[in-house]
Amino acid sequence: MAHGLQIRDEESGYNKNLFCVPKHYEEDLERVFIPHGLILDRTERLARDIMQDMGSHHIVALCVLKGGYKFFADLLDHIKALNQNGDKSVPITVDFVRIKSYCNDSPTEKISIVGEELSTLNGKNVLVVEDVIETGRTMKALLSKLKDNKPKMVKVVSLLVKRTHQSPGYRPDYIGFEIPDKFVVGYALDYNEYFRDLNHICILKEKAKEKYRI
Ligand code: IMP
Ligand code: MG
Image (cartoon, rainbow, N blue to C red; front, side):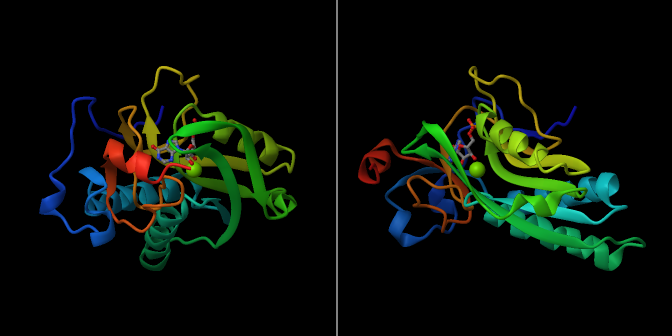
């Protein structure tokens, strides 16, 4: 079973004043939880593990928007580096789906999936790239839609997996970090569309949740 880098429940992260964060968010952030550099280092290793398993056939990398876009771009850069410098290489093509399942810091009842003609995935080796898995509800909905298009193989990589009591136990094939059940933002993860333009994964102040609530 896949394991990510474990971040303990007691972990409080880092003083944000020791890092660079955008001025417009300074008042909103409580702590830096996962610094950008650590995300990139872990992503480099995920790229290697993925290529070891999937690197003998053409891969279709499917980005789950919007939250997955930073992780997707950085993961693909590392995979491209392996393709360029290793003794074997495979073509990578990209596809995108957009899923919305959250409003404020809570899940919405309806999961909306919009995007490409997924029939292009027929017969392909697909790597789904997601930002965070909490209950697994979103990923299960996407996977069942993908299965209708009969891909040859589907693997899922998620940058984050939350340890939550409500989790029905869905686990992706590759995991960046396993984190406590906290709401996090940054590195393309949002709170009502804000904080995607922040490099580090951070914890919000309660008053910021009020400020950006809709
Ligand atoms: P699940 O369906 O419960 O697994 O939730 C997964 C989806 O909820 C992710 O794709 C995110 O879009 C969103 N989400 C869950 N937790 C967070 C978080 O801490 N920050 C930002 N988005 C989150
Ligand atoms: Mg997501």
